[in-house]
Image (cartoon, rainbow, N blue to C red; front, side):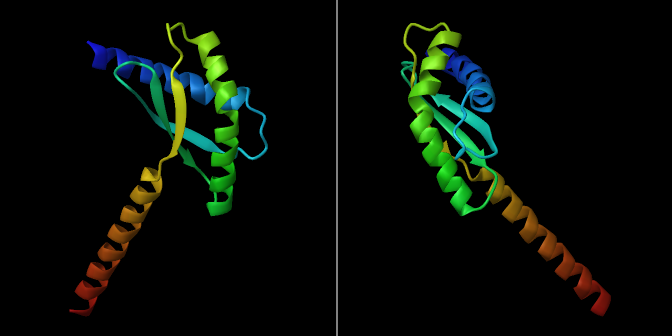
Length: 122
């Protein structure tokens, strides 16, 4: 039961945090990001928010710094929007799964091209 509540709250937080970052947070350091997942602890007091940042390493670092600075403001707005007894502490984490997936696709494409060139030669 607790796990299901944590999962439902995570989905709700994902939607609300995405909206808050898009519409409410005005920090110029925060670039184009996507909230990829939110993991909420079983006691509903902590939420890890995984974000994917589009851009180079400098933009990623600045975006993560901006999110860290805006955490209190985001948590305050979550408290106003989501009716829970205790508003979870928010911790932002960089999610590199999209980059990892793109790298795997790149490697698979390279292998396929090499196989095709080997067939043409042999």
